Length: 496
Image: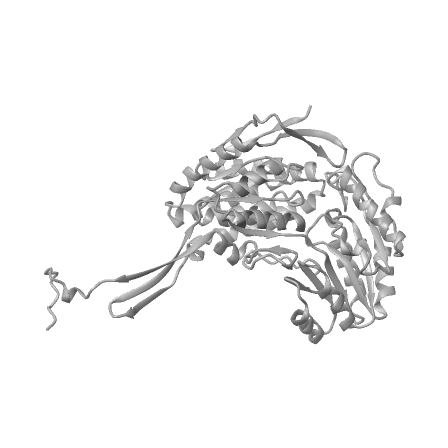
């Protein structure tokens, strides 16, 4: 019997009364496991009103108290990571190892946020003028919201809420309706860690909830991760309503392989980065750009590794790749494979022909060679287990291909030449760069974000830029006359 998945408002689960629902599936079996209520405008209003009241008190909490709550939350999250990973696997489909890895990367952001007493430090200038001091402080915005994608139902919310809460805001999470249960698990952990009711709320929903968040006058800022068309919509709508917005869009991440690269290392990296989590990662490698004569060796090495990948239910041991999130998405990805073949790409490995479980939303791994930049399989964000290989004669040709792409989220280079690597990091017009690292997700004390069509707004996610996004600066100029000049006898000698 499918479970009912609720909102979380003012420290407790709250059933939706909108009458609108959406099914939740286990992608590995195709079975409907839950029904999630979709919020209407009134339910969003209630969550925001609760958050607004809570924000007024939470901003008065000392930095040490906030840090203590973050530390307690971190310990609970670490202690119960296996339970949470099982929830992620059951609703998203990624293998347990990937789910645990997602939680670990989210934990890094919580650990960063525990340093809020240092992160919120301002500056001070004594005697800027005679008896005048000037200092800066950072203060919370109030109520902020996060709209998060299905592919990382734990990590991406933690990118947002850890810093938002640490800096004194209340936070409203609108998770994906495809895998919403992890959000309620996080909400309970926040409550158990001692976070006051109303500081972390969850509103389940679809576009109705999103639009209500973007228009609500009491929400000061919105963070988003998702596809580029939706990111653009979020940014334009949110800013038109006077909000601060960071909207991370889609990706078409390239991996440049030079002729001197360790081909085995590059092939291992390509397989892991392209097919992990069934390619449903915003940092997945989807294009390998092979320079010169390395192309044949690279394609052969990748193709040789694909039959060794075990595809199945992510909850089972030794499974390397799980299903896609929905049947519709699986069919969409399969359509791109057909379009690539029709356009002239060489189908080295066809995921449509793979032996996969008959139940669930499975698709095998696909490797396409001789892909051109005009093909839809190259231009579009596929978000599935499809790796394209584009051939380039020279380094300069490869750089032109990469820099001409509309997306600029992540990129990697594989080479033994330090000079070439340094030139690459200088030349490439992409926000996150890996050198012999296929998925260059920054550690929590840096910030995450791409360039061009992969980012709308001027603040990247988490890290120092995350602290800046969820706070605003205030500069105070103060003048206190020398006590010796006061008309009140304070025991200081009078000046003459």
